[in-house]
Image 1 (tube, rainbow, N blue to C red):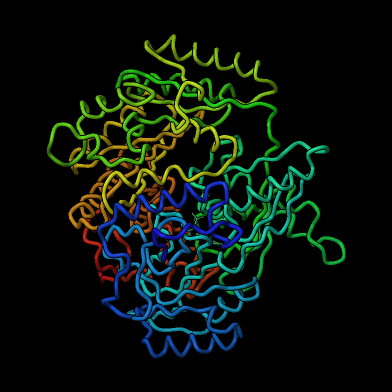
Image 2 (cartoon, rainbow, N blue to C red):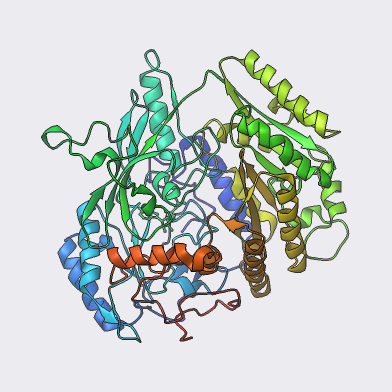
Length: 628
Ligand code: ADP
């Protein structure tokens, strides 16, 4: 556990540490968060060891003892989450505790795992999966189930469930701790192959070293990073996360995977399915995403069909010049018009990346200060519009309602200045009062500088500052997809805003707007110590999912506890999609050993027992099967 007297370890000291360039910043961020915490640093377990459902603690411990002997790895490879292991929320860059969801939206023990295993190799992963299939138990309905395993890479996708399994008592496979090698970095092909524990920070450092080595012979390469750099490159891609350079579609820019299937066998996707000469890897594995016959790689994203142990990615040759900027718009009502201007610019490829459109309230929270700093009118709950605008007026961008963060890439600075002038004109012609702001116009600590780094593939930590908005801050993301059209944008935003008001939450909309669709990301920031706030957050999520689905807006990704509800909103054709997912799941994983319930897909060994959580499930403190 971290304490405020020590420095955050660097990536050279620990695989999951901070890059040296960010060590001081990381330490300061951690200490600010700790100062804002009133909850105890650790909780002792009230429920003791929670074995997998249907297994006694004795049977489970006997099975673990057998695995320990088989793995021959000593005590370090398996942690049993019994009374001796407290639940520690920690913070973003701690070694993932891998015991529960650190951003618990209900009782921290309701998503607690029974044990954590730290495999060292693909062979270990295969052995663990075979072991899970061997140790069966019976469900209440007499169905045969194996030990449920839940693979994570870094466990840092906080806001979507972190390191927690959907079924309490599952065994978490923490792949990152012992499997964090960059297996290949190919400057010529502009690609890499990574293991699950390679973070954006680690990949960035390695690519920078390669760039330095090849500086006289090759164009430097960029990675693409999401808003925070501590996550796993592989984990984020399989969860279909995004970044902000032209390579921002992480799964779209992968090339080749090696996967342990639910029966313990191995699969390579793409050209890797064709062996290379003399036992080598296929030379085109990181060059062509497909193989021959039906494409299967998509089956392993947001899925419970395999454990990805190696994954290839394309790297972007750095453009000669790039320029980040923001545009501000004065009125709340400008929102639909902004989206209308973005659509053709994005479709025509005029915009260099997927820009972010943020409400100005996020100028406040990204300063890392608490909501109370900005409150002038007394009371509690969300800030009023007047308070937000009054506070924004004192910040570097001044008062406005929406802020567009974009980046252009091109051959020369001069070309970029011309592009920027065109883009500005398109917005200014449609929206009176549009202002263009460049990095040199704002102080060094303004968010635009951090955005400029992320949009040039440099991983940072800045977005953690949001969490200081309330004490014991945690967040949940609500992330529906809508067409890039003003009328849809307006309808979606109104719906989300009304429900935030109903449940007394500040609304933090960030939109990633592409030419034809946009991801609307609403970040619900709550106090982990406040049971009422957590309950309201759950109600808000449930109602937003239902109300948005009724208008045709569906989420691209969600927290574990809302996945059943979201999966069931994709109901076209009598739930045809979910039925296919279940058919495939049952064929590949008949005993339901891999991540049961992940993304709303329950294996046959669990279906019909009432594991699913729906719109009415607001009390999530104890979850488990309830016969319907
Ligand atoms: P992050 O990169 O943000 O730390 P995680 O490691 O938590 O992300 O991964 C995000 C989610 O993706 C996990 O909850 C898990 O369900 C899934 N996942 C992560 N790594 C793997 C993997 N190697 N194989 C299969 N699924 C994985």
